[in-house]
Length: 435
Image (cartoon, rainbow, N blue to C red; front, side, top):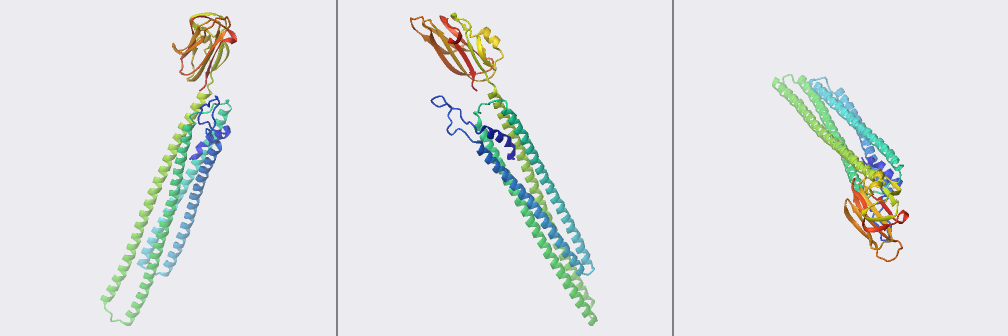
């Protein structure tokens, strides 16, 4: 079951690690201490789980083969013993009864062989399902390689959630391994019960043979005595005949008891195997659903991070602005923005992709007491005072803010009062989607 995460591990191996936290240090650089989980650790864990699954599968196959071989050998030995016993007995009514019981036991043996073939078929089906899962893993690995070629993708800040999901899947895989071991124990129990049944059957056969031999010897002795003693009464003969009938009845009862016990044991084993197979199938389906949800979350996050939005613009003309929207309509650079015409006309930046944005403005003016606002949907989110002075030299006021923007949110610069605005590179507005 762990094999479904192979594609994800291939991607992890390619990027050499995962950023767990995107916090910044005091100097503005990204912190790296204890923030990465290497791909090698994930790959080692995956190989370990895969090796455990392979060992369990080989163990089950080997146990089935050994059990089948031993069953065939034991039943062949039992058949030879029964044939030998049959050759040593007379063609009497008791012999016919034993032959019928032998045929019934042979039918039971055939049923056991059929059940063994069914178990082998189930094992082959599970092997085929494992191959299908490996094929899906290869396809998913190819998809991740294609995604890697689309460009540099920013690290996922939700990687901790993904790590927890991987740990959950590992726990489920371990649980499945435990179930496989329990199933192996069931097979061993079946083998032990079969050995006990064969031992009881062998003892019964020996006892029956001894009884028949004793009966033959007694019968011979009685016939000799009958020939010597011709004056024996019919009552003695009748009593001895009843003893023979009682002996045959006792043998028949013991065979029926053994047959009932064997049927009950086979029924319990079949129920246990059915419940184990149903539990394994349920866990495999649950794991497949969990894998699909995890992959959907990863794909969604990758798509969100792949949306790059940025713009840098300047005023196209210098001049006096008074209580109005400042239009920075000379766009020097933009990416991921489709409504630039509307922005150049109105001076309002309209958000198209939801995310965290950095808004930076630098405005130059020679007017004393000049100031401006950054507005978000008509609300002031910053106030920047350019400066109070008596010279005619240009002074610059700069501001940087971050906000989460939703689709159709609008951002613009608003000039309060009346003052002179420098155009070109001296005044600029930059908006970047950082997440």
